[in-house]
Image (cartoon, rainbow, N blue to C red):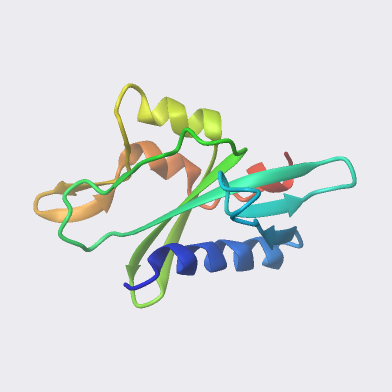
Length: 134
């Protein structure tokens, strides 16, 4: 998919708006470490990094790099085809814990020659309340 990164950002932005969360695209020049800014209250603003990939591609272990940036939440968007997407919402600390000592955060794997989401991410699927209740 061409422009998968931007498409993923817009899908996350829409998901947050659907949950009545005020959210805006970050300004790349002044806010290079995150993609979206959510305003939860007068006192609470959170920064969201979005990473997107396709489940059915030639990679056997889709890996996400540069997750050590300055943000509060990571949303991994995995497209399964024709507009079908899964969203995995985690704090930066949770993402770094899953990544462990690896250079990148692996998000998919091949099992019996079939691509699937890594088990470590499954508990974070559609956990939008993490952001809403931050």
